[in-house]
Structure formats: C-alpha cells, structure tokens
Amino acid sequence: MLHRAVLNNALWCDAVCAAQGSAGEFSPTLWQISEGTPPFYPNAITLTGEATASEQETAIAGLTRLRPGGWGVKDSYCAIDLSPQEFEILFEAEWIGLEANTPFKSSHDDLTWRRITTTTELDAWETAWAGGERHERTIFAERLLRDPAIVILAAYANGDLSGGGILNHQGGVVGHSNLFAIGNKEDLVRGGLIREARRLFPGQPVVGYERSNDLASALALGFTALGPLRVWVRG
Image (tube, rainbow, N blue to C red):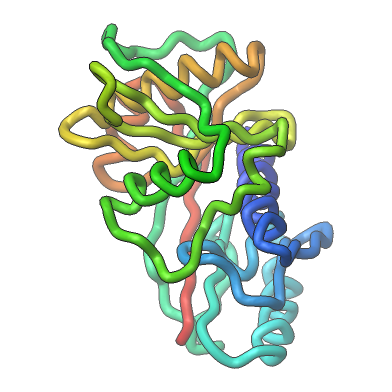
C-alpha cells in the first residue's frame, strides 16, 4: 500500500497544479514541475526509494537550475540527501493506510457532510481550511470541482461549518488530505471523512500522511503506519 499512497499523493499534487494551468511531468522515479506551485505544494516528489536516490538527486539538481527562487521536494521514502544542494529538512511525517475491510474507531457524531460544488463554496471552504486567512494566490482552483476523482467535502453541525477535507480516488486508493476542524473536533472530522470515503468509493483503501498529534490521532482511529517521508526546502 505504501507505493500506492506515494503515487496517489503525486497524482493529487499534479491535479492541484494542473487545475492552476501547469501540470507536472512523471518519470518512473520522479514527479516534477518546473513552474512555480501553489503554496504548500512541492516542485518534485520521489516515486521510488533508495535504489534510485542518486538518479533523483541528479534530476532535482538539474530542475533547480531552470528557475531561481524557492523549491520544495517531497522525499517519499526518506532516501535522498539534498543537503549538498543547500536544501534543509522542513518536516518529517509518516505515510498511513487503512484497508477497505479494516474497522476503524470513530465516535458517533452529528456532522452533516456536503460536497463542495460551486466556486463560492470553494472559496469559503479554502478560507476556513486556512484558519480564516486568505492567501494571495488561490490554492484549490474551480477545475478541481469538475474532476470525478476528487471530492472536496465540508462538515456541518447544526448548520455551522465544523471542518472538512479532500478525497482523491487515484492510483488504486483513496487519498484523504487537507483535513481541518473548527474547535476540538479533529477526531470526529477525520472519522466522518473516512466514512465518506467508504461511502463514495466502496472497497477502496484510504491513505494519506500525518505527523505529530495528527499522526497519533490517525493511528488511534485504526490507520497503519506505512513508512516515513520528509520534505526538503530551499530558498
């Protein structure tokens, strides 16, 4: 499931960039994009592990020569060393997976889930996801709403927005990401999002990655740790 989780994440990042008008390129070992990316999204993602690390490091060195400015690389298997290229580690995290037939521990809740379908709803959703702040550049473009593999969801309690998340069904799994909760409802929102994943994409494993308290929460819910990743940044 680890390899499918990595591919799913790369396909999701590519979809976000493509919705902005700049799709990336896939090789057998690397997803990369030479253009700038939306905030929080990398310029490259490794698709294979240690055996191809040298090849990936060389490709990234060539990529960074094409454009000055900031760069981010998701090292999906913690296999490459970009410190000689003046990158620093931004954070480390863990890939997680939940098989389709594995029960998960989730409390009953009164959340009502709705799919985001309009630009106005998407704008409000992104603002809530960002903690009430608006970024200079929109991250999630309207084109994502028309992709049948991608579902952007909002959770409501008594008519008030309580949280949300994104599901993407690509690479033989369902990725869950961009989860947010208003108030102390993180576990309820994650549990509800997983139920939505199983309702919308029955029989499919759910994957993603988390760190710190969010990782502990996901593991307590029933997810399994699949392997580490790290994110490198420069500039």
